[in-house]
Image (cartoon, rainbow, N blue to C red; front, side, top):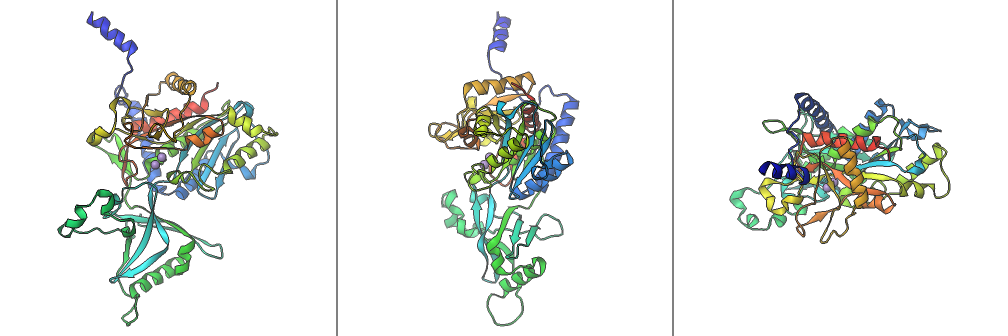
Amino acid sequence: MNDKNSELKDKLFAKKQNGWEGISDEEKKIIFNFSKEYINFLNIAKTEREVILYSKDLAEKSGFKNIQSVNELHAGDKVYYINRDKNIYLAVIGEEDMKNGLHLVGAHVDSPRLDLKPNPLYESEGFALLRTHYYGGIKKYQWVTMPLAIHGVIVKTNGEKVNVVIGENEEEPIFTITDLLPHLAEEQMSKKIKDAIEGENLNLLVGNIPFDDSKSGDKVKLNIMNILNEKYGIVEKDFLSAELELVPGFKARSLGFDESMVAGYGQDDRACGYTSLRAILDTERPKKTAICILADKEEIGSVGNTGMQTKMFDVFVSELLDKTKQNSINAIDVVYSKSKMLSADVNAALDPLYSNSYEKSNAAYIGEGIGLNKYTGQRGKMGGSDANAEFVAEVRSILEQNNIQYNISELGKVDVGGGGTIAYILANKGMDVVDCGVAVLSMHSPYEVTSKFDIYTAYRAYKAFYDYNI
Ligand code: MN
Ligand code: MN
């Protein structure tokens, strides 16, 4: 009787399973090797511009060409398009007409951080500091008293672009934002966490030596400006046309005695960016044209000409249609209406220290494979792109046919909060889209945590989606 009971349960109940269970030594080795490459990527590419450079290099090594250097495209051809160094689209031309639809995987490669203000440098009490304005949703208290590196570009009026990366190399200095000692912090400690560190106090400490022993003011600032002038050839006004980003000045690493996880900055959404990039690089002669999107500006609403809302994506698809000689009036709309997409963005993983914020039956867990979110949004799914049941079933079927472990979850308890992704933007064009990504602990913090099993599973899922043909 009991046997029959458990047999029936086995057959009828949905099961939760730790993905590491039943993994062979060989598979574990493959997963760990893939993660090593992923960790290396996280350490090289800490900003959207650096991700695009890295992707271009890897794509060219895999036989992708700049679409602008090609006049005609045929099945099996591989091309990329770089939009203002912050956003890349990659395509492998399929054997079928594009009007049968595209298979897309889209991730974003910008991450929460601190940007320098246009007029950042000042001197106070004998210190030189740089003012910042944070980018994306951060908990401000997480960004003080830690090593910070400066990455970005300064563009001069003559068009010269100076690349800046300082704070990564052991021989280079790092920077930090100070915090009040606990001995004097009685008042600060009694504030709400969100008010304890003010945005206008996220100022970076960058120097303390005066230029000379004259009586004039701002001598420490002068000394720093003089060092910057010698090192980068810039004057103070050049900060106005700079994009300088403060990112954690430490490295991504394996996490845990069992090394099952990855700790590192920027895994929202480079976990999905890297895996979708690797998946398209390994895609040969798909039936449907395969496209990988790595977008910018998701963390501030996907706006601007490098965010997912930009027309630049239409420009790219039109160029694919032109160069495959498939373009005609309304062709692009027909293409979109038949297209299918995985919106590859990270998921909120259940945190054992804060499990109260999640509804356990509908939470994503680290190590349980790729996570599908039928919808995101907040307060009654507001603003979320709700995938159609028909398409979710199709994606489930692809994953099950390929023996790829997945879970379907929500982002936290009802009415606790919420969030969005780029899914709705492509869905608005008429595509079928579902959110599909890696679960992350400590999301938006300087040190996010993912599972190596999930990272490799995401790669397999995106690859299976490109290869799938219906
Ligand atoms: Mn994201
Ligand atoms: Mn995010």
